Image 1 (cartoon, one colour):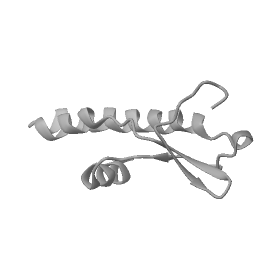
Image 2 (image 1 turned 90 degrees about the vertical axis):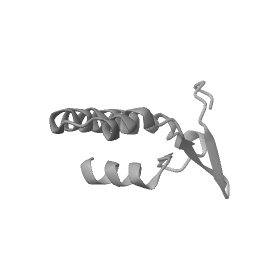
Image 3 (image 1 turned 120 degrees about the vertical axis):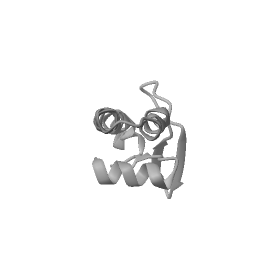
Image 4 (image 1 turned 90 degrees about the horizontal axis):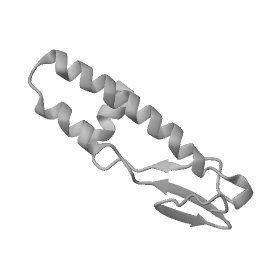
Length: 90
């Protein structure tokens, strides 16, 4: 993009672009699965939710209608269980 940002992937639809960001805090999610105590899981889930919300805000920098992007961008989520956790807890 003209502002120097680089997106991970783009889908071209007609003359417009759908930016796709594939950076995702998978390690944070994996930590949730490895802890045994309920307290740690709750704390890690909260941290994961905060990280996801920040990432969503970061992805909005790729929405550049002046450069023929649509008015949305996609955030790639690498696995169905991660998507489920994101939707359920987000």
